Structures are given as C-alpha cells and as structure tokens.
Image (cartoon, rainbow, N blue to C red; front, side, top):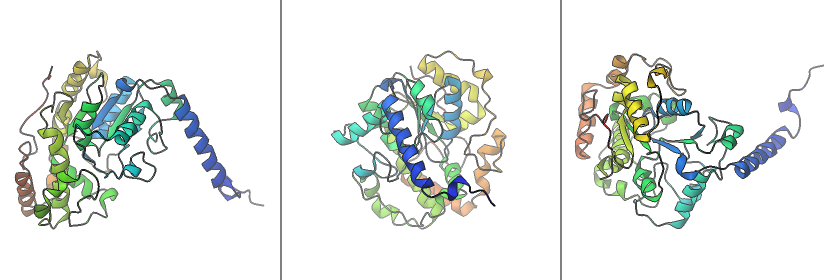
Length: 324
C-alpha cells in the first residue's frame, strides 16, 4: 500500500494557508525596526541590483526585503492604483501613500513575497533591513524628501542597452508588447507628456529603451542626484568593485575590509551562460542587436536627452567620487 504524501491529504493546502497567515501575523507583531536605519538599493530590472544587494547585505549581515513595488494583488500599494514603475512628485502630500511607506519602513504588513530572500527569525532579530527596489527609481526623490535615512540610499544605473538585452532574454519579459502602453494611474505625466513620440516606437527593444529612459531620468535629472543618494554605475562596479563599495561605505561612515568581499560570486538571479569576466560582461549586449537596432536605440536616448550612455560600453561619467 502506497503511503500518501502530505499533498494528497484533504485540507493540506487550507492548513498550510492558515499556518502562513499565522506566521505573517506573528512576524508583523514582533518586528521592531528603526525606520531610519534601513539600507535602500534602487536600480532598473536586470540592472545589477540583486548582485549589489547581496554584496551589501552579506557584508553588513542584515536581511533583505524583496521588491515591494512589484505590482501584485497582495502589495500594500495595490489598492492605491500604483503602476509597477510608479512616479511621485517629491513634494506629494497624499497621506495614504505616505502611510503605506511608513508601514513598509516600520516592518508592518510584510508579506511572503517581500520576505522571500530571508526568514521571519532574521527579520525579528534585526532592527534594520536592506530593501531592494528595481521598480522604484522614480520614487527615489520622493522617498528621500519624505524620509531621513542615516545611510543614503544607493542608486545603481546600468547601460540601457545591456539592461534591455538582459530583459529580452528573461522569461519575465516574454509578454512585452511592441507598442508602448502608458500606465493609467495617478501621476502618469512622466509618460503622457511623451505620448506622441511613444506611439512611433514599434519594436520591443525600443519600448524597453524608452521605459529605461523615462524611469531613470527622474533621479538622474534631479538636483539632488548623487547628493541625497549615492549614484554608482554598474560598469564601475564591475571594473573596480572594491573602490565602488568602499565609496559607499565611506559615505555611510562604516569601516570594512572591502578586499575580503567575494565580488566574483554571481548573483542569485544571474542568467545561466552569462559571461563572468568583467571585460566580456560589459560588451556582451552587443551580441543581442544589429547596427540598425543600435542606431534606433541611440535615437531614443537622444530624444530623451540621455547623455550618460551611447553605443560605447562605458558611461560618459563615473561617480566614484565622494559627494561629501
């Protein structure tokens, strides 16, 4: 007689759901975060934020909260009609929006998605976490204007052509349409003012490049860029990780031996087959596009007045210099 597995018993999934709900209640009741102690990391999807977050969290020995801005029905922001890549003016006075960010930083309402990279015990025992946002770039000026963190958030920016090449190879972007869809939500003016131009874009790579431009221009063009937050490029992180991470820790006034960090370890979300040698990794995106596509993508950068990148693999500006 075959022994039944737990999955085959009646009520298994109902019991599991109750246990998870009780675990969430217990977690949220016992968390005691210091709101101004958190480390915040911002980047574009496939922009290197997982790698940087894992380096920083392991070095500082703090747990990670994972992508609270991902659009999902369980998100604390879902009922607010937030887009997956939401923009808020830095002076926005919406009390309900502010309340939800306050709850996030207090550690209230944490769900299974947000704690997927850690465990309840680690969250309860810590007074701070690293929160990784790869869909929150346009919120960076708002968050730093509304909250005062002891350690400046980190804004990691990567060559848009490399970001898009990686996105197009990832299953998460398999359903991207070749027409740009402007989000129907509050504060979509960063999209709608470009409506006529966005209608002219007819390929997936151009749609994704435009998305990169819109979401990165907000923090890049802000007067407090690299002042209220620490701006670094993925390229300088790849070529000189010790110097880049040392700059971050210097800004935070934390002493650590950066030479002891294993920067060669791939992140947990690195696609299989990706090159690991820095010089190969930076130019790998060129294998994904032909000359015509690259020229068309450059035209999108020019329209949005993106001066940091062109068809060279390196950015025009390196930020490895303290802003203090």
